[in-house]
Image 1 (cartoon, rainbow, N blue to C red):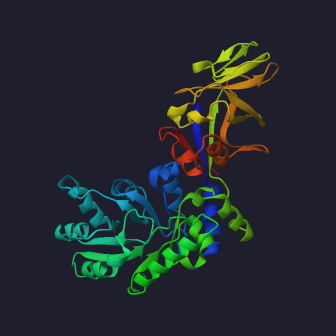
Image 2: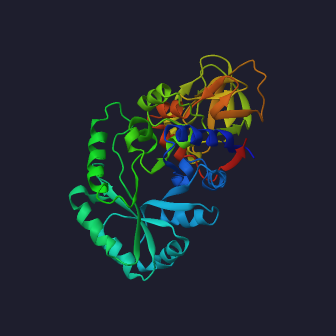
Image 3: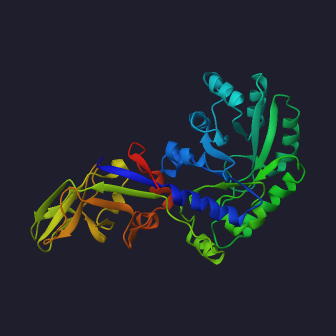
Length: 369
């Protein structure tokens, strides 16, 4: 094993408990879509399925739900989409049999499900301003009443998605929440969920019956503003993921020699280069070229030259005791030194969500305590 991901089980459970403190009246339903935000779908699911505070799990589509249903006992909500073509009817029958809760955001889909002859559990989405999936506000009440008349559909919950709950200015979020309440108050018999990680902190009244715990499940803050709100509420998140590899070659480099494709870095003094078996294929973004750092033996060292498809180069001092086979931390901590997902996101001009989600799913994930 030369490159691997470590998933810290204790930190994952710790983060769940921090959010349960925030919303003791709400159920925690972790979101493990998209390979558990890059952390490892099966590995994270296996931990969460044993956790009593976790009441159910959420995924993005029916394919993920069917895969998840094979490895967990908890109920599953599909948040976004599923295929309604004739080729997908077998999958839909599985959803009905396993009581997987499906999303509905247009009447045609509801009628299609009803006509299949199976009993389906559904989760109705209302678009209160994000302008993605969901019934428009002005059509929602009438449409929900129509769906209630479809004998093969059982409505479990109503939900919406906030557009900017991670921001300091909560005006638009409050407007969205008010629109949702005017609709959901007409249907008190159904569960409601509106709060993601950010909204759980920024809008306590949005916590409702269920919290969709996404990015913060993994010990990451949705934004700097939410980090500050968390600090005010004494919420401490612990990163779950560490990304490590090993040095596969070390070589001496002389002044004037250049490194990598397009020769974007020139050596100014005698140094050594450590070659690592990671590149943009593994999810190490090309924008990290010449500005990222890695950790070796408790110290940080710069990435030099362009990130390649499967390799990166790291500058070491000319005199060093670092050797081939040494463990390198690409993301995570070593001693008192850390490279965070936020560091990598800043260097690659993106967000921490993308940094972890894009890590190649073929890299082995190991659960550590």
